[in-house]
Image 1 (spheres, rainbow, N blue to C red):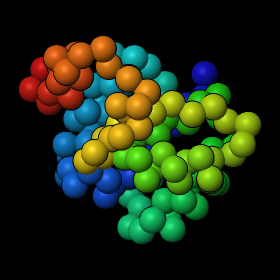
Image 2: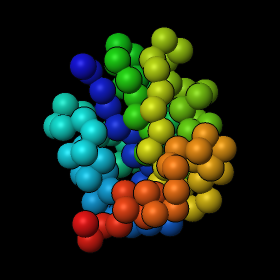
Image 3: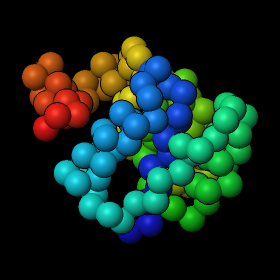
Length: 116
């Protein structure tokens, strides 16, 4: 499987280090080390959008790690034939709640706790 996790470095106000803890945990639990991580080094929204556009071609899945705005950018910039997955790392994550990604607050908190 060819997958990339696209990480918006400025979404949610979390530090890049904290985001990488969550992403590492996600990879261990769900995908192993088969994913490339991209976008974390970008300095502007436009640069992140360009990375989405250029690096999403030919993927089996693009995993979008960020908030609602990041996912909106993915809808507009990820290659149209590439399926999307969502790893909510924003501040509000309205999309996460709308999709009911977690069954309970406890399940969500267990996933996001960087100490586990």
